[in-house]
Image (cartoon, rainbow, N blue to C red; front, side, top):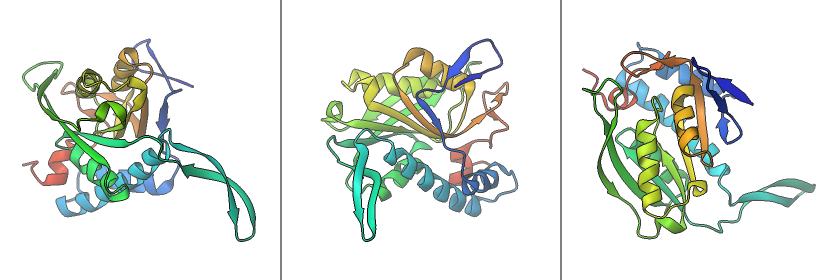
Length: 229
């Protein structure tokens, strides 16, 4: 499957999973997109939606394999997590921490890493600036869930992926997990890292002049933490 952006470049969907088939996802996403949703309700809806996304991401790690299950009434061909490779969840601070906590609640004891990257708001292209990382010593042996709710230009995600690769993580052992994305950012990631897997809930239409998603929802972290004054 292919998706085109406003230019001529196409987004290949072979390694990108868009989880938008459930009506509960559409409902919760609509609540987050609505500019009239207040701080408290926004936090509640965001936590519910990130839990759904975290469940989906954890079900798609390579250690989840087909398995024949014996039920009380017969045989069922299902799935099983054989846990043959340690998992690590790495957040792009600050909004990524929201999704990180959703993963940790579902997978207690999972290794945790943090990367601080911020957009240069003075730059027209909002280029990313790397500030800080704190990662497990054995992260090169892990399958890594890199989490950040929003993907716009792709700059921060690419910077974080490069940071993980510099620590010895193989590209094929990284899954980028996010709530809202756009074709432009996904194409940038795919162009540089064609082997990476992506799980997202939505691919928005485009970016505005401030490099925010359209229709989007504004600044996810500011609305979640109540700092959008």
